Picture 1: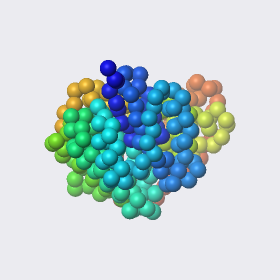
Picture 2: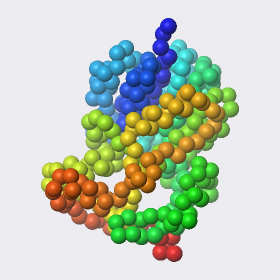
Picture 3: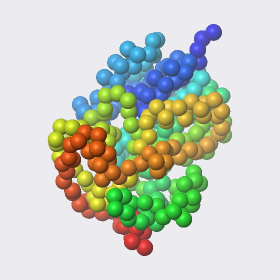
Picture 4: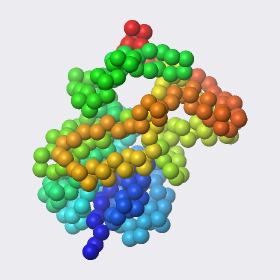
Length: 321
């Protein structure tokens, strides 16, 4: 009997590549859908062809389809041909700066591309679980209204407020969004309101980490860059918030594991906030301390105060309240 097939969009990315390996280890054949559009969006530093080489080396019979997710006819045809047992959608245009510079390309990739996949699944394989990897940015400005307190090395949520802000019922409406967040909000809304297929929306709470070669874009590998700077004696730049900004760190393999569990017990229109919790979080200062304890090297750094947007001012006011 043939093994079930998982269709993974964006296998050249940090999460998509890990999902390919994880689902393969758990008994799936893998088909990847990726036309290396990151190289178009970000230039040579965004090229993910090296990831494709690793996937082909590590996954026997890996199928790759260099199709643009915006090509509706091609997506409908491919999904009808493959009829996958599961679809994991991790492809996206992820940059705030690029979203503002290329609004039509950003919308077509993030919003229209997702609609193409959802409709293809509804027509060809409505029983297949559909997992959409989203972003915590769909909550927009509202998280900045959470009351915080300032500690020596981090900002922390006031304990009596934790339960109120944890649930997936936290609103994504009545909130300011950037252009990128608006497009991510649209694709999230489509996944949340499916009825004909079993789809879920996964919102990572913080920064995901990768097992292999780090991605070259700094925003994608903050901790890796910090550690590399320490080992090489290079200067690390802290941008705003007194260096006390906190990230929930989660390995991308754990994200893949969550997706597999959903595929085993799928439900329609579900939403999951995905994170490692406070025990797996750290601020910039705390990351410095932990790295220094391991390497014995003092971290070099400079602090750059950033102009605060309105949402940042809200955060500052709530912290002082």
